[in-house]
Image 1 (cartoon, helix red, strand yellow):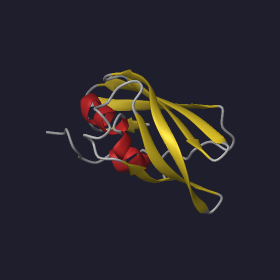
Image 2 (cartoon, rainbow, N blue to C red):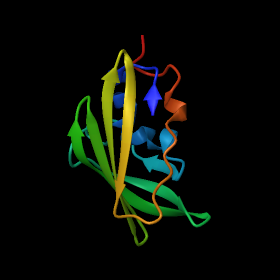
Image 3 (cartoon, rainbow, N blue to C red):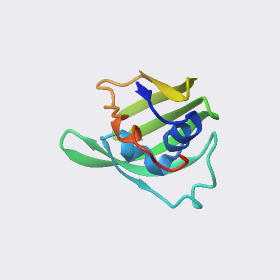
Image 4 (spheres, one colour):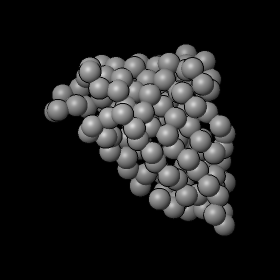
Length: 124
């Protein structure tokens, strides 16, 4: 998807575990405050609740790749399901193309980047 926002602004939202619910509809909540997560980077682990089969299931998430401002990947585990999600960003004439790759999960998570299309944190 091509978003009419800067690469840095889009990446900042995608790479913030507390913002996962903004673009992953199955994420009901992420537990923790930004300071409690110890910053952003590989190995950051956080609690979350995922919507699965009509109910909210507790789980955990982990940042498994972090290459600012180009790529971030997460492993999300809830109940017996493990989701691996990698997002890659590319600057195209001031806009940002986001590619989403999912592995190891059936069904896959829904990804809705529409809420990231408008102005947000990091835009000037």
